[in-house]
Image 1: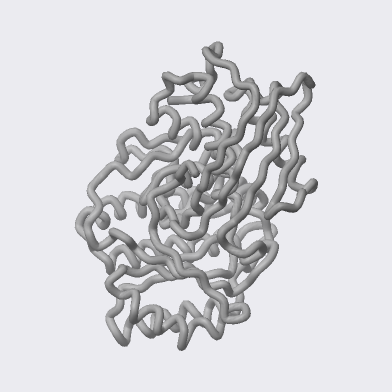
Image 2: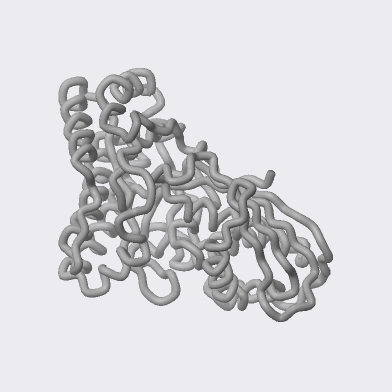
Amino acid sequence: MTEPNFIPRNYSKDLEKGSVTYQAPSNIALVKYWGKYGVQLPKNASVSFTLNNCHTTTTLHYDKNTNEEFKLEVYLDGKREEDFEPKIELFFERIEPYLPFLRNYSFKIETSNSFPHSSGIASSASSMSALALCLLNMEKEMLPDMTTDFFNKKASFIARLGSGSASRSIDGPLVVWGHHPAIEASSLYYGIKYPYEVHENFKNYQDTILLVDKGEKLVSSSVGHKLMNDHPFAEQRFNQAHNNLDRLIAIFKKGELKQFIAVVEAEALQLHAMMMTSTPNFILMKPHTLEIINRIRAYRKKTNSNVCFTLDAGANVHLLYPEAEKETVLKLVRTELAPFCKNGDFIMDRVGLGAIKV
């Protein structure tokens, strides 16, 4: 499916007034998407674990509107956030060809995160996917024959136009976004549930998020992606991502945890290497990030544990490990790693199954 498939014909039903609520999770990429072109299209395919506990809950209230302009208000934790509204209006402008009813309604968007605001966890994936699902729910009421498969694909497509990584927050536990020739039905335009065999070793995988830094990111994701346009190592990086996703297909099937560690940690460090070698360049890791990484590696060497790390475009560390190691890894976190977190804070999470209607 491409863009024309998501442009609706005449709606068979009209809506007057109502509300809908969705809860959508964040996700953590194993193979990173870094670099885009066109309208939010990825230069390489990515795959992510959908999280369970880190999520956004959004309620969309809608009422008939006779104005020809977008009319919306945004509330975060009960407080109106007028600074967020221009961004949502730009999002509405981008998605209007695919949801042409938007100007016919006034909207009140109430949203809250399960994780603390400014905790250093990017909320764009969970928040944009939750909003996209609410809007798609409206359209499904106007088009009752819409299938679940089409609903999920279009929700991911719409979410992607607000935040690329949001395309991976509709489904779970593993989601692929971007075309990869070895993954059937993979698409540039939306995320799909990983379609192949996944070994028991990767079921109910754990993610403990170590909050090294909090607040605004040093550089926004949008700026970071643009730096790849003229990056001297961009093509090599895209090829690496392609090959690493190839490797993960076999790793997921066979349950090879040591190979999983090698790929996931290499992906994390390659992402940061791209930022350190761009123009201008950025160092997103903090001294405590490096200390945590070194301690994880030392612990793994000493105990033969299968714990590993990954990083987003920031200083925080995602600690990934099998459920069978939960007790011992949490002991490591509390005794050796938490002291390097801001105020000793970390978030316990695990792999989840995707968004839900509330």
